[in-house]
Image 1: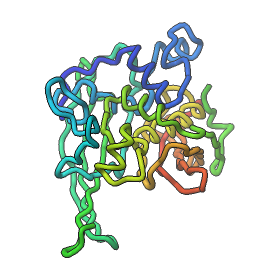
Image 2 (image 1 turned 135 degrees about the horizontal axis):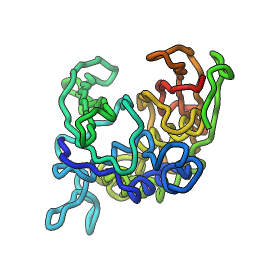
Image 3 (image 1 turned 30 degrees about the vertical axis):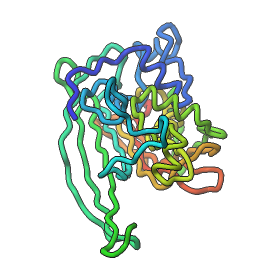
Amino acid sequence: MSVERFPIEAGHVMAFARAIGDDNPVYRDPASPAAVAAGGLLASPTFTQASAQWDPEYGLRPRPGEKWYGSAAGPGTMPAGSGGLHAEQHFTYHRPLRVGDVLSATRHAGETWTKSGRSGQLEFTEFITEFRDSAGALVVTARSVAVQRRPRAGEDG
Amino acid sequence: MALNASDLKVGDRHSQVVVADLSRTQIVQYAGASGDYNPLHTDERFAREAAGYPGVFAHGMLTMGMTGRMLTDWVGDGRLLSFGVRFTSQVWPGDTLTTTATVREITERDGEPVAELDVVTVNQDGVTVVSGTAVARLDV
């Protein structure tokens, strides 16, 4: 994933805060004491996850003219190679993220490791995403770990 | 609101219910805001019939977002230096989640006081759904 331009927009920040049940005015009302004290509207701590909206390659949204894999007339079909789960997510904040920032994101693979579990091998894959502002300064570093289960031979998981 | 270093000590803790009786609509709301439209989270028929789950379940990142809300409510706005979690159990519609943060250490970074926190969110049965750590700047 690479996102060339991820503008931190007021309506998007407000909708994201609503979705996590956070009615803190620092995410929506620039005249509120909280926003004034913060020097303007902020984005909530996990907001960079919404950079998916600006990722042209992002796979988990329907696209015009392409068949979507969720239910429609039929129940849909689980895509091959799916079944990975989000195991960990870590954020390092180099400064608060503000409405009005325009970020870019670059992602690279980190480490991979395996663990043996009762039901087979667990394969962990790490990705690091760096979010930088328009001056090139780091704002947020995100580290995600995905896990995929590989059943033992002769088992179907 | 922000925490003051002189008012805080190791072992202090704060708890908050971050969602009661989680609705499918809130999960849909998170899908729309985040852009993650994985139908495992929003499409009951797909989750049951195509994927073999009992039904839809929340995005891990929704649970992390709700967990983060408790942190910012407690430590103040724009004060987190880091926040990380492991996802340990799925969150289902109807779940009620409570987040607790505990002060593990009060220390300094770049000459400023910070609190290192352990963070855990549990469901109504006491099962941990996410656990992790955060570091927050404190006022002197």
